[in-house]
Image 1: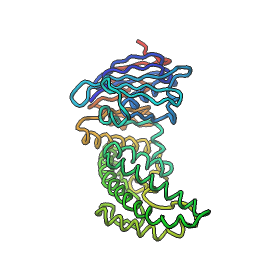
Image 2: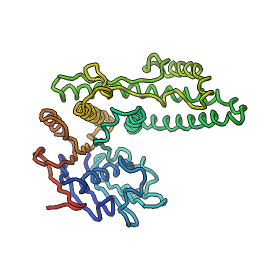
Image 3: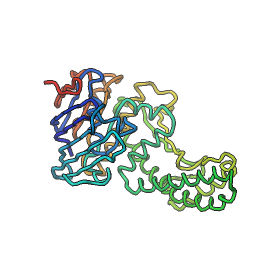
Image 4: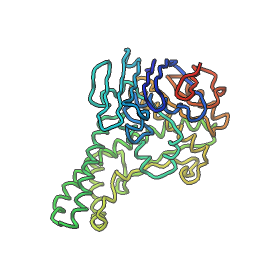
Length: 366
């Protein structure tokens, strides 16, 4: 799986860009604010239809332009393919084409150009609140298991209905009559989410543990712990058993939810912890340890995706070598010796293999 050629028009600070990539390592070099991360964003967006930076599509269209266009020539699924996106700065729907044919949604290119991205913001996943960690897990799991994404979407819809019931009861207590029905469905779908998550975190944690042990030269033992509702004694149990335990959990919190008018507990509050040598990374980890652990998680994610798609996904590394000591830099660079890799860097001498692509003010120099 590889991206052979990328064309950009009016995307971020790129007016017109055409670039061919090496099937191995591509080092994107340049000073700050020249467009290195923008290039990674375009590659990631090409295969997912999602930006890891922008909240709105309009943010990716160059100021004053009527639209932005991204084209990619890809070798995937044992054949040459093409992906084209057209983005607009207003409410007009974006356009997606795969192999010249219009498609309805990003799901129509799922698996054509999967990628794993590391950027400095990923450090916050391990250091801040649980919502970012859930978002990370949901994003990866949705790509690996389409049934999980469907269950997650359904769970959120039921949760929204329940929240509305709890709010509306202040004006009309009769709406509580349908609350048990929504709780029952919430437990049924929630049990499925927990079952998926338990297996995902077990696989992710095991792979990340191996990477981190080698990363740290055997000095740090990585452990990932999945945290779900307290009544679920075994998240690997049959789904029906988990459902029953979730119902018990909601019954215990029934009065508290009525009093607060909020959905206080459930799988939507799930989290995971990372410990190094038994010490919480979130509370006590250094910047270097946090960066190493975050990269280990990304390498583990790539391993799981490679097994799913039977091909190595693209690896996108934005400013990854900062704050790593020479030994950890060497280990990471050894890990990028297979598959197609894109690395942004201000110091090209650190990477001696692959193709150098120098960016200056949205243009390729040399």
